[in-house]
Length: 274
Image 1 (cartoon, rainbow, N blue to C red):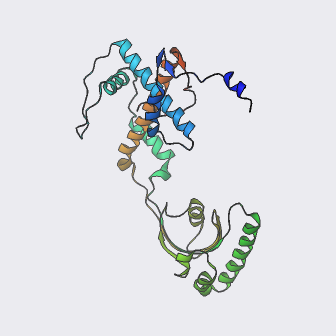
Image 2 (image 1 turned 60 degrees about the vertical axis):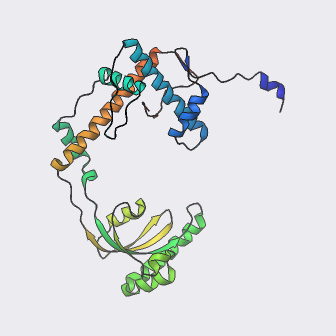
Image 3 (image 1 turned 45 degrees about the vertical axis):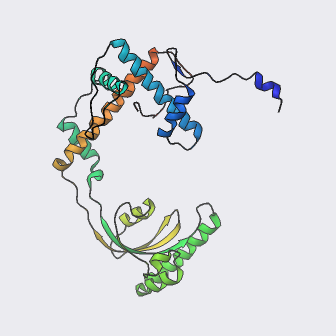
């Protein structure tokens, strides 16, 4: 490497908002609140959060907003900065409360969200194969097909087949039986296969772990939560969604009017207020 080149590379700009610098020490301290897959992503998220904070504080000061710090139910009192940002948002960001018609539309369009999960009683025989080993996947699929044909011809052999061939050691010891299964207890591919099956049916399901010969023994249909019981939760969700979008738009307006260096706020899901 030509070390002489290092002197010609531009140094990264300091992060600042309208001439107010946000120190690297402050960003480093904020990083702990923004876990990420790479350190640079955590640093960028922390810098964005502090830029947004500074934007709000500067706007609150410009508007001369006066406020009194509040306490939460546990007795923790807001800092002066937290109180100023809260008061600014309450005054400047207006969001309508969702009415019953909006809540009902959301309920009807997302009815599956309000279905209490079905219960399944099932058994399986797993022929394991790594996702990235195509040859092993092909061989596993063929073996699963052979086993499926055998257990369909002689359903009573399922338990012995599971004991002798399944790579799921826990269920193999139980003749392949998985007991009662509800949503979230298995991988989504396996859940999808159970949803397609009828009690008494046997089929092959492909998952990230390999191929499963699945037997569905029983299904207990879940019930749908009535709208009246879901309405309050829906209203809270819709209100939070609208508030988040309104706040993001308000931050975007402030950022467009400000001089920001060292970081971009474009296309980020960074929480707006920390």
